Length: 345
Image (cartoon, rainbow, N blue to C red):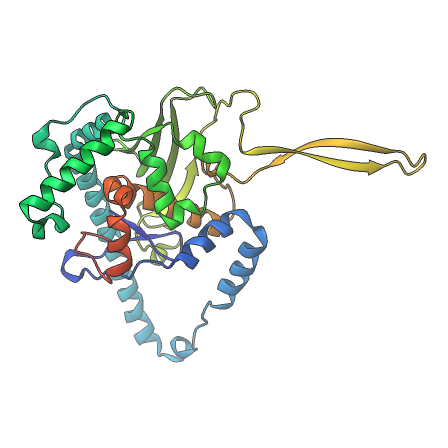
């Protein structure tokens, strides 16, 4: 498990010094989304970051040659440390791949319940909520009867309707990306899966968004792949601070005609300079939408980092704990806890 720092690099804290920073505030999450959509914000941020770069104090230049020679020896040791650190991250990735295979059957069963492919047994549905602990038998029976009465008055829903849409709406980082026209589409989202790169391949992970057949596009799966470099740069080994984001790749969405929510049509009136006549011109322009997520940025480093933060959050938090974001319990944990006992934050 890796986490994105303020740069495009991912840092893992060793298990003996696990300290997790407090969850980002809503304003920070909103800024992340705004960064991906507003080039002016990016330019201002990059200018600010450039101004923060430090400069040598001049002390090194004043050292005797024999001391500089020893400093060079320390640098060579540092390079070896960077290569050992790279091996550490490679092994962490191997562990992620190993345990992902153990989690997957549970996630598959979750998906089957959500989309009504499997009906859980009474035993699987037993859950003692905190508020039930202090209820008397009489109160429990009354609550049960009222619940049964409500169920009789409603149609029997299949699976868990709007499961993933509700998850997205409950999480600030994702809800800030959602537009009203996205919601009818996300009602058809049945599962999100994480796939890690195969052994021996460059480090990467892919998010798979699985959809049931719908009227909006013909794809059954939309994908987003994040590729990372996990070894020190030979020309700048001291910059290595964990796996570095190299690129991300989206996919082509095969929109049904007239259903592409990432584009909108606007009409503008134009006046002819010579004749003075007015005509209406129709123009297609980009439109804000969650589905722009599948057309990732290509150049701006800050945009790429913001995009990766969203992908990382889906991978590390949303997919493993989806039911808790659906119920809102994970939101409360994120807001209340200064630190969490997870392996990596």
